[in-house]
Length: 471
Ligand SMILES: Cc1cc2nc3c(=O)[nH]c(=O)nc-3n(C[C@H](O)[C@H](O)[C@H](O)COP(=O)(O)OP(=O)(O)OC[C@H]3O[C@@H](n4cnc5c(N)ncnc54)[C@H](O)[C@@H]3O)c2cc1C
Image (tube, rainbow, N blue to C red; front, side, top):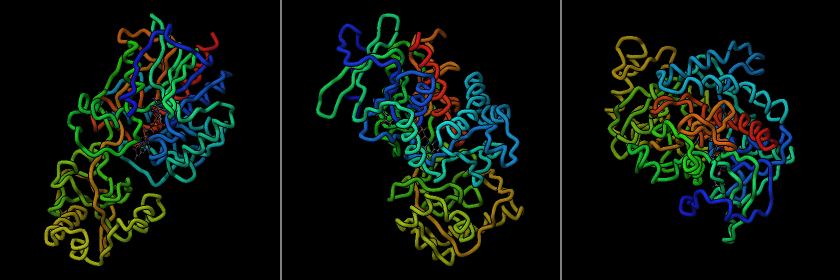
């Protein structure tokens, strides 16, 4: 992990700059790629550094969904959405425990960022109408055509190449050079053959993601998730957050994270939650439910982790299976034989190795709740939910840490703030490297805001970095 090769902040006097580039971006995920596009649009020669042989990151693992309000595709579909509604939804989801200034400018800039990527950079986003609720009062999840993170990542990389940005892969940043005022003067990179190179810059954008893959940072900031399974990009080691902090940048909400409870076991793939949203339920090894599955899908991973053997089972039926058979994760799970099908509850229980009587009793109770004859013991509202009926389907899952939400505090230009509110002169951050909109807990994450923060802050930071570098 890069954490082992971290040289931290080095004095400029130790640098041997092989090149001087106006804007350098570290990290080739959605944040870094979008920042590079915006810096290039702003007229700056731009270099993107990526540790891996190909830019992918957590972005390529994701479902590629981005929340944004007031986009042209929403207007085309007649969805009356505004940044104000988006703002209100985020404040409600976080129970007001997030930074209102951050939420205000991100919810305002997200829609224009999506339209800009579509119109100027040929990435045709459209509203994914299969997503509803979970904190969003309007349908505002946008995705690329294939609705996958790898599609999004590939399209961003092609756009960056077309825009004339140089991408240097297999180039891991291992430290930053800075002067006494905290002005970044360059980056030291390590190459796979063990050699180092120093590259000077006028402004730096950090898009290295959060710290979900760094066990020490997880144990320090989110002790409740220490030792829980991790499903994330291996370079999400918190490099950018640590360097920004070492330069005097403030950090916030370091306790926040997203931990889905739907990682298929043993296939180790993210499974589709639509089955649950539309009326499916989750049970543990004893065949009983243990939560309101929709109350806190961002934190559901921790609830699943607390179950016997850290396992849970998602249960739905043939109607829902048919409704979501086209979704990438469903197809992937089918190809891996991860989904078990059965004509009766008892046969499903046997296929999943669950106690048949307990599972039958659970599903009978859920039926009563959906019919309005009984209150849900976990307080879940099943309003409008599909009534499950045979044949049934199910999958075994566990909970995992997917990505962290805390990071560097930034202003409306994605420029990093010090603890006293002043700005570091030429340092910008976005995506998982910056503080997200989720507030301090696992429950505040509103769906699809991870990539929203990446492309929105990436665009703002790249554009502002180009201006700073030109001065
Ligand atoms: C399974 C899964 C599904 C998800 N689905 C969604 C979704 O549908 N919608 C959503 O909004 N969010 C989703 N998320 C979260 C989302 O993927 C992240 O919030 C987002 O991709 C972060 O983008 P980023 O650019 O900050 O980081 P990344 O995409 O991780 O990019 C960071 C890049 O920096 C590189 N890097 C790191 N350190 C260095 C270094 N020292 N030197 C050089 N390069 C370095 C990495 O290799 C990587 O390529 C999901 C996450 C997971 C794990």
